[in-house]
Length: 274
Image 1: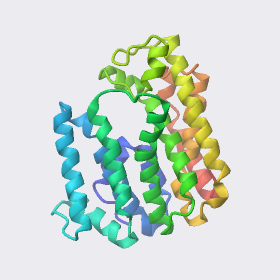
Image 2: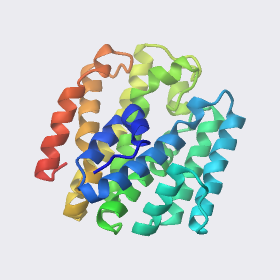
Image 3: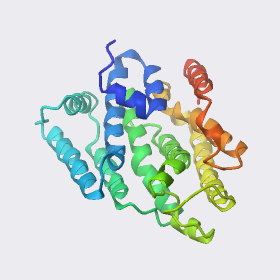
């Protein structure tokens, strides 16, 4: 099959989901890549603008575009037209896209979530919702949605921990504000420290618990939709690597192991496990 050109952004910025999509059934691969390209576009808005106001304008453009798609009048935009086709083909629920936009509004506020509850809600509105849409594409239902929700939370939290050095370089943080304050840390000026490692460990524990719940609900996930769950072994690998590094997100080991992760993905895909 032909891979759409916008999949290049997924390959570059969301390589794990890109690899998962390549292991999906051929007739669904392009639509998954379209969904993930849309997510890449939305999730990177704050990183690609110079100030939050511009980010809000870009996010609103995509919100309006999605409204137009559901009204049957998508704009002449390659990715938007492909997304419209996928929405129609699988009858993807509108409310899930609204959840993504609502959650991504937080990115433009340039402040950390208040507490763990707020961080988990952010993970649910972003990663969990994207994986639920993937579940709809793969199986046509939301059966297994609980397992997908918990996996999405685990994946989002793991990604936030891994991105801590990048966020710190931009004087931002998505770690819970109350935890940072309790350990005497300034959210806008994070650097390697034992105190930061303790905060990271606390968040990692919540991610691990969410991942464990997702795996406990494995029996609820239809076999046809297992591709949506392939992020689980990758999240497990990242969390174990973080633990071996003493929960230091700045540790050099956090940037390696790509080949091993690809092999792990292929193995789990072959056996339909996660």
